[in-house]
Structure formats: C-alpha cells, structure tokens
Image (cartoon, rainbow over all chains, first blue to last red; front, side, top):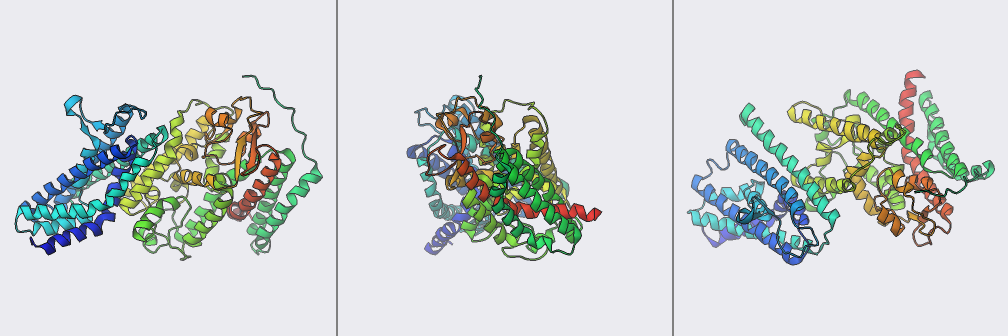
Length: 220
Length: 386
C-alpha cells in the first residue's frame, strides 16, 4: 500500500473528510478557542498545540491500528469502550478547562499564555494540547475509514505515514479557525464560551456514561 | 432614590381611541372572517371572541397609553391556549403526545421556530436539514411545513426584530403569566452573567447539532416539549430526555418566574432568543432612554422581565440588544424617559407616534399569527361545552 497513490488517497480522504472532522471537533474546539485571550499569535499557538497533539493522537492510533490489524480497533464492542472512555475524558477536561479559564489571568492581562490545566508549576499543560489529543483519538467515521486502510499497510511506518498525510488533508479545514484571533474578547465572550463548554461537557458525560451502562447491561 | 413622578396622564378620549383602533379592528375582521362563517359553533364563537379580545386590548392600549399590561393579557392567553389546541390536535391525529419514531422517519414532525438557528450550520455544511420534518406540508402534524414557519418568522422578524419574543412566540406566555402571579419577587439579586446563558446554549447547541447531525436542542433541552410533544419514551434514552424536558420546564417556566418575577427561560436559556437579538440590529423599532429626562431611578431596569437594561446601558441611553420590546420599561418610567423610537429619528421627539407605528405592525402580526392560535385553543375548550 506504500505507494504514491495510497498517499494521494490519504490526502484526498483527509480533504474530503475535513468538514466531518470540523463538525466532530467543533463542539470542543470552538468554545475552548473562544475562551482564550484575543490575538492572532495566541490563537495560532492554540491551534498549533491542538493540531500537533491531534497528529500525535492520529499516529498513536495508526500504530495501534496496524499492530492489531482490524481485529480490535474497529470491532463494535471494543470500539464502544474507546468511545466511552474518550467521551468521559473529554467531559472532564472541558469542565476543568472552563474552570481554569476563570482562574487564568483576566483578559486584560498581557501575558501571552494559553489556558493551562492540571497541577501547579511544571505539571500544568495547555488545555489545547489535551483537547487536541483526545479529539485525535476520537473515532469519528472518516477516522475509522482511514484506520481501516492504515491497518492494511505493509508496515507500521507506512500506516503512520498514511495517517500523517490524512491528518494534513483534514487540517486544511482547521486553518480558518485562526481567524478567531481577530475576534475581540470581553467578559461576555469568555463567559458564553465557558458556559457552552460546561453544556457540551455534560453531553459528553452523558454519552460516555450511557455507552458504559449499555455495554455493562446489554453487552454492546 | 426619590423620584419625582409626573402627574398621571389623562386617558385618551374614547372617540379618539376608537379612531386609532379602527385599522386594527378592520384587520382583525379580515383575519377572522373565515372563522365567522364556520358551521362549527365552537369555532364560530372562538373566532368572534378572539377578534373582539384583540381589538379591545388594542383599544385599551390606545386609551390608557400603556402597552405592557394589555399586551400581557394577549401573551398569556397565547401561552396557555397554544398547548390546548396543539395537544388536542396531536391526540386526535396520533392518540398520544409522544412522537413515535415512525412519524419522524416519515418527516411529519411539527416544526416550531426555535430550531431555526440550529439548522443553519448543518445545512451550510451538508445541504441537508437536520430536522425530521418536511419543508412543504406533508400531512400528519407537520402543519404547513418548515417553509411556512420560516416565512412567518422572517416576515415578523424583519419588521419587529426581537419583538417576536413578546408578540409572536407561543411559548413565552406561560412564564410571563407565572411571573405576574406574585406581588413581589422573592429572589431579587440575580447575577448579571446569567444573561449570557442563551448565547451559551445557542453556541453549544449549534455545535452539537452540527456534530451529531440532529437538532440537539429539540432532542435534549427544550423545556416546552413538556407541554407540546415529547419523545415517545420507549427506552431509557427517551425517559432521560423526557425527564430533562419536565425538569427544565418546572424550573425555568414555573418555579423561577414565580420567584424572580422575570421571564427566566427567555432571559437565561432560550437559544432562539439569543439568535433573535441579532435582528434587533436590523429592525427599525427600538426603545431608547431620553438622557435629558432620566434621573436615573432604575425603575425601568427593575421592571424589565428579561434584564435587558443595566445601569451602563441606561447611561448610554439605550437598552441591551436582548430587548423584547414588551413595553414594561416605558410603562414603568415615571418621567417618560423610556420611549419608543424609530431608528434614524431623534430620541423622544414624537415617542407616541413611534409607539403607534410599532404597535400597528406588531399587533397586526399578533392578530394574524397568535390570534389564530388563541382561537384554535379556545375552540378546543368550547367544543367541550357547545
């Protein structure tokens, strides 16, 4: 599969799936981006962190997909576990993020820092990076389609390369989000973004719990 | 703060008030003449009573110079009678208030205006409407289809902006009625940040609608599902959804308006209201504060049912963009500083003329849209007795 044609396929698949990826990541990306301070540079940093860790998630998934073939990664029963855990983690991170925005220096602060989550000092990591990674390993339909192809690759390197090219294709659709840097931030925008994050977190919490309950009770 | 109250205004003469009501009476006759000729007696009586009701309320608005308290009668009647007519029709056609999945698949889900903003992004991305209804009439409960509702919404919105939420919305009347019951508010201190709630719900639901490819608000958060049509609870998910609907209805539409004397669902939750606020920027009608007359006593701020006035906005001489043009602040102002206004004209030069022009437009639409809903609900009740 490691032919230029396969990589062309990965790129086209990524480009074609971009809107679906944006729709899938939008509930996480948009409010968290709006909750950051204004400025193109800061928003560029946010997107870089988000996309870089998203790539990391893609590559990790590619390696797993190739190692396990299509046996585990895409079987419905196992997939629902992955879904549930990722949704619960997303809910937790979004809630923590919304809380951290309130604690971060207020929006007149000149410090060009991304909102961080986690413990104090060195243990703090940008929320964008965590969210990027979690959306990177989310199993949205185009991602699964790419995973199936990656599982057929000749070796793990080819599978990862396939996912890297697929990532490039989808990332084109995320570039316009850098324009959010032009939007002025004030208390209203930040509060709306934080409230929206909480609502979306509740949805993910529900989705994760329901998947776990359904799997425990009905076995699927 | 002591406020020097202007002497109470003399009522307008009966003759002059009648003259001013004449166009509305003619419009009402035009809108209801179909009802007058119906063989069904309950519908005939409902048509006559409703058209008279709307004309009398307008006459009182003219005679007393007051808008809010008379509009409230109409609005509460609309809020209470919409579920009556709607539930009756649902029961006749389906035998249950729960919408079965088969009806959704057949595209026969009735479409209300609230999901309109949530459908725009998914439609832009996929060229598909993420609502299980039909664009044109499709039998069953779909009524006139989505196109008719969008058309009505657009026509009213272009003219009155967020006035829709005070003269056309068939949900808000229930909480306005609840808010009118207590003499005084039990909860007076409300964190002003809750005003951002509708925008947050709008943002979250728009993004989730795009991600889930369904109208997320209708599926998960609409409090009015409790009094219109709920999800047929055939499984745990349906039970959870209905539980959320009832909980939100009880809290936002019943309990909180009773405690705060505010329209809490509209002010702190409704995503359509947030979307509608944008159209206040395009409507020619608005409410201004005449800074030369304002003391400021903040009575207007206290009277606003949706917290659309703050001390800062009063100092700027305007309402916030979430103003629903209900007229409460104008009626409450003892100095006549809160005034109706037409964009492009000077503030407080001829405020009564601005009020009249707004009311002719808003009340005309209220008769056309809300009036027929009131008449339908009334006919349903009368059908039991007549």
